[in-house]
Length: 260
Length: 369
Image (cartoon, rainbow over all chains, first blue to last red; front, side):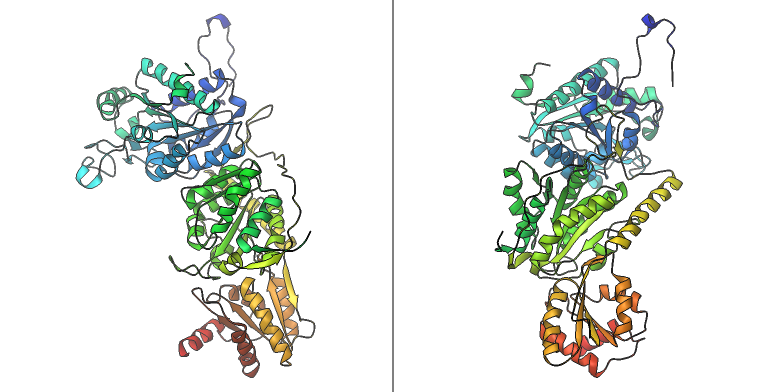
């Protein structure tokens, strides 16, 4: 897509360099696009687009490699941190991004996630937590809230039989290998700006070899939740933030010393 | 260079190092532990990548990631661990990236035991993971042969962008033999036009095994098949012993083939004109050579440490033209050469008919013991 700017001085917004021209397949209102953009902006600002290798998950972001104009591989369900480990160990000078949703990261891939963090693997995970399986049609996720209706918890998640949601960031923060673990939200511009800053710190953590970094992003799935995009933003703020408090769960002293 | 005593698993590990393996990812399982243990010190001392993964699925997916860089990468495991790796192996096959797998087979199914077995021939040769793919499988019968095949395995994996498996059993992994190791090859990472490394000064590369457009997926399948057909045409390997004047032929791979060689020598000493055919590439299987051998022999004996998995490949070449007898031991039981000698003698005494179901007759003999 070629766009001619008649008055270049008026241009305040453009596609980041790290994007291809491919329009995303995400549902209108979904925050995946926002998360993608923040990552692309950070990689561009750090001037590391040409040394970054992305790992796409299985889930809604399975086609992330179509949207980022960087080297990319596509992992098996949940195995992205293992694949990222393999790449990083062979190419230690590269920057490795693993982009995963909650089903991928916290259910089938929990072992890979925990052990990558425990090893202090120098990779960065962008963790999209929208409390649901989006790609497969809205089933219960490991982060689905108690009482929340999904296609596999049609009467609402019953904690007596279906257990409780997992707070991944808090759990990973207990591991010595983790350098930077924070949770942010994408429900409004202020929080989006804070999310971008966190993504920057996460990649700086990796570039400086300071261990495993993960930014958990509370995200919407208006389609899976069965609400409008606007309602989904409000729902996130009202229901998800109390269950998944925003905050910094692990900032290793060496990461804090970077003063980013 | 001189011959040294080496334990099989350690010799294989060192042979991989000398063949230029850049990264190893593995998980403990008996009887292959020494590959992992040896490389845990050997790889770091050479500045190469080693990770003891949290599981076999993690190990194979680390291999998958590393293979996407075009480096020489490998893992090793044993039967239950290989089962756990099947998902990753299918993805690696579907993404068309090269890797070497060492499978030190043990008794099964299930947790089974840690004794030598050949029960995973079908799993490893016929795919194992989902989808249409054909891994290259080499089955050495000694530590020396395993060592000699390690560089070959890497070359084939990279030539055909495929999985190349060294298929041995616990006995080869655990025993010690005098071995002549090859010299150290330099680590050379080939420049591939598909490998990921960071898109510096070039268009981005991306690697995936997902093709939602079904005609494209069909084309990918045909491309994988095309490379497999080339491997079938070029990579047949086997060894023949005493076949020149043989009236009877024994066929066995790996350890069963090695035990059969002792049996064949004993039978020769008894005046029986018997020879041994030992496939080394069990996938691609030497179908054509077996077909040629049908013309010079009156009957064949297939010996395996399983229920007759390779037997089906032999029968695909024989096609009921001559009688084929089968003898197998299961669950980690290693046959003695005398058992094979006895089978050779029984075959000559009562060759049976070409259309006999040899696996069925063997089962009935086993149950009547």
